[in-house]
Image 1 (tube, rainbow, N blue to C red):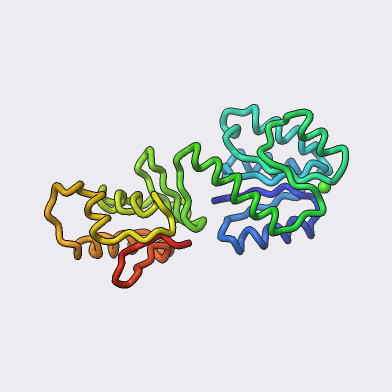
Image 2: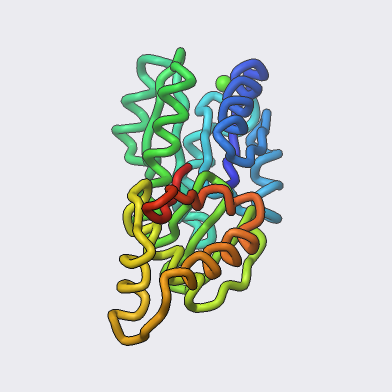
Length: 222
Ligand code: CA
C-alpha cells in the first residue's frame, strides 16, 4: 500500500511518514503540490493525505483535480486542515475528500483514519490487504506481495480466501478441507499442511501472517 503525503511543514511530513512506515505502509512525501502532480504521472498511490495550505497550489484544487479525473478518482483522500474556516470549506464545498483531520492532530488518530478509509475502499473493491504487505484481489484471483504478482494454484488461492473470510479466526484442517472440496474428495488432513507450506513460501515475507495454531489449525494474524 503506497500512501502519498503532501504537506509543506517538514516536521509534520516527517512525523506522519515515520509512523505510517512503522505501520508497514510505503510512503512518499511531497513538500509542494507540483512535486506530487509530477509523481502521479508515473505512479498511483493507494491513498493521499493532503494538506490544504500549500505554498504553490491550493490543496482544494488538487483534491478536485484527483476526484474529477477517471484515472485518480478512486484514490481515497484524507485532508489535513487548520482549525476554523477551512473545515467549512472542505465540508461545504463537498470537494470529494473521504475524511479530514484538523491540526494539531494526534498521529495515532491519523493512522487510525487511514486504516479505516482504506478498509472502506477495500470492501468496495474486494481487494483485501494483509498486514500492508499482501494484497488479494478476490474478483481477479490475483495476489500481490509488496506489489509483485504471485502465482498461486487454485487450491492455494482458495485456502487463502477461506482464511481471509474471517481474519484472526482459527480454521481447523477439517474445516479447510470441507470448504475446499465440499466433501467431494477424500483428502487426508495432512494435505492442508502441504498446501499451506507452499502458500507461505510463495507469499515470502507475507507468509508469516499465516499462523499455525498447534493442535487446532490455521489463521491469519497481522
Ligand atoms: Ca501547510
